[in-house]
Image (cartoon, rainbow, N blue to C red; front, side):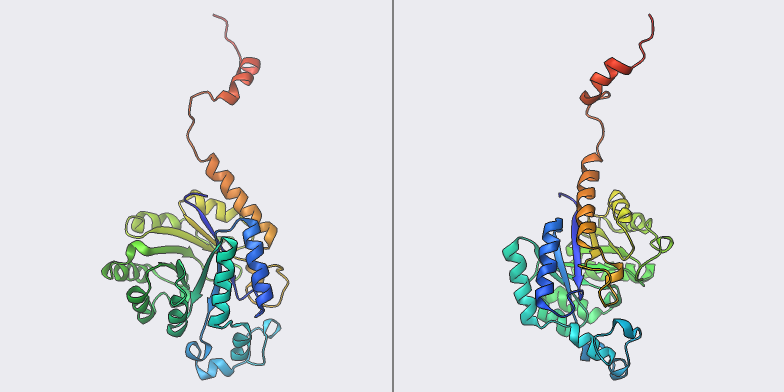
Length: 288
């Protein structure tokens, strides 16, 4: 698809298992996604000792006795990420990862993926952003959940000052799992388009809602990237599965975006060729 790309955000939905991670890549390819995206965290760097040793806030979704143990269970090593990148390349899909801390940013940048994602929670981590600007030449995709207008403006000014703004894709995003429709605020895409389209590479939409209708609307409002969480089974244990698309849903989304793209045209003639037979048969002919 020209002008529209779909990211299947696998994140940690692999449950810490490489076999499932590769299965998710295969399903993303089958559905027609352009990018398979994961997450990378250095949990001891990212979390305070208190956060690391605290119980998971939703124990039913936990893979460990503490939140730190839960996060470590789901974490893949940089060697595993390299294996997944090579697997993606062998299958013809782009590999990417969200990075949550300096160590993870440096590790993933060493793999030289085409794009790295900055999650909403880290879009004001300027040490991390500066390091990427100086040491990573690919695209920097960045979400704007939990972020006010002043912070977005500062962020764009920062990338402009670093002469990296044309490598940046900004995503409209609401941080919730799942997000009620009333809180998606899709017209923020229009605001981002009007204010920043000429300053950055592109505007995207990262959704945590149910269904796919909103993503179609986002595309018609100018989003060039659509990012959705992706899983095999929404009932699996974990916080992201419930707000994720399953394979058939992702396939439907990709097909729908292709169909909408084909439909978003003006008429080549005032009466189309497909209408001529019907016009002859059905159109009222006034008496002269």
